[in-house]
Image 1 (cartoon, one colour):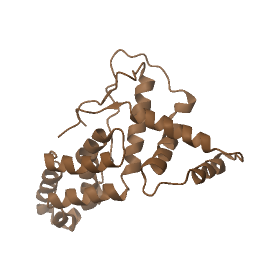
Image 2: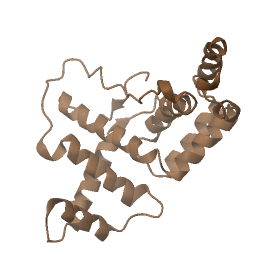
Image 3: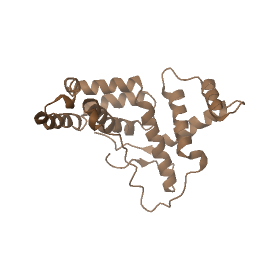
Image 4: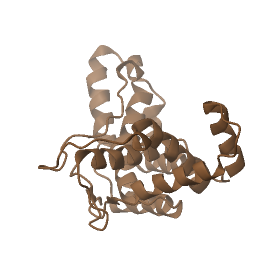
Length: 217
């Protein structure tokens, strides 16, 4: 995926657990954003700009064996071309306007990974690829550390989902309904509004720790 996203010096990473928590939050945010109508519209415009609709109407399995390699080669060439400045600007403006803290990283990942993989899978489902984000290359020399219970991956995913539902989704989810759903999942009867608000704040703080100014075309 290119060079590693660094972290803001004002919020230093002290161990690998800290770094993994930030990465987990960013990746969960990406997962939440993909089905958003605004992101889907960006994907459609990206496809149109690369003249992909014609290719996407034909599955690779429908080609003759002698044509298959050439068809796949043509597809890969079209979808893997580095994003242009115009493509970058169009997607970045949308993601930033949505209020995503690490919008440059999200923009880069959509253009360089998510959109190409989605297109390849649409035209060649028999060889579908999974979106795998690079989680290797932790900062050298950091102690291993650990992720405390309240910052475990399950809690991070839940908090980021709340963050998306409440802060990004249009229209935003009702806070009381999010709290009611949480209560039902953990068999609680008291008010959990403050717990949801705290989770949203935790998710936002993790996402703000992404320093992604270098993620440009």
